Amino acid sequence: MHSGKNRSEPKSWNGKPYNFFGDYLYERFGVRILKLSLDAHLNCPNRDGTLDSEGCIFCAPDGSASPAINPKSDITTQMTTARNAFRRGNVPTRYIAYFQAFTNTYAPVEKLKELYDTALSFPDIAGLMIGTRPDCLPEKVLDLIASYNNEGLELWLEIGMQTMHTRSLQFLNRHHTHAQTIDAITRAASRNINICLHLILGIPGESWEDMMKTAQEVSTLPVRGVKLHHLHVIRGTKLEALYLENSIALMTFTDYVSTACDFLERLRGDILIHRLSGDRGRETLIAPAWGLHKGTVIKAIEDEFARRGTHQGFLRM
Ligand code: SF4
Image (cartoon, rainbow, N blue to C red):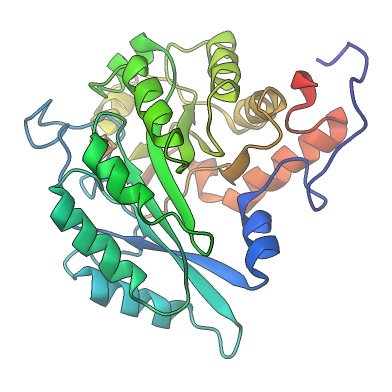
């Protein structure tokens, strides 16, 4: 309910009630920008026995990769295949190389440099995006990532924060603390690296107030982007077993739409929204089924903002 006075004029970003990353990219480059999801065949300390061998409870055996990736091929082949698949006649297109699967800073610096350099050697590359855990960002790796910072390139570090709450991090079997997330963000931001936080709504045991606290916390941090999605159950995960035992309840469509709007209303307006919904296909998604309809989720969030007359950052003004 929004019973208080309207604190600001309705605001929009290119007609949207939130600051959408895709629009920001189009404004910056003036052409279609596509993300090429990559699997660099790296591991993860939460899977290789260093911290645990089972991984996060929501992480699929493919390390949360995009289903479009052929994980057996090398970076050059993945880049070539994806660029060919996305080509649409003469439509001008540039690409972001997105190291997505597993933990993409979990290797010696020399190896990481070779991987990133290979991706950046392709023509029409507009950006580099590196997904990782907060506890896998030693100084040398951050220095390497910062070395790609130049005005022509969109450079992003995607850090899996998920939530600020300790009991939720434990439930997810993350094996890192929120303090480690803050530390990683602080050290990356001091090198002018753009940070995008991966966040999950609907973690069992989290109240609405807990999720709003996470939104408020994110707004105090030197980050430029967030990826928001509901907790979904992927085939082959520990979460699947819990779900099939009826041990957990997932968010309903209506709850997610409403909570995502509540979350965004508390988020700084300059934070770019990279994603507002989970992205899994029928082959791997167990539940909730509404997660298959990403466009419907996004439309419902936009409609809910219109109904409320609010927007991202509305409750921060
Ligand atoms: S840290 Fe990432 S790759 Fe590792 S188990 Fe968790 S979600 Fe999977």
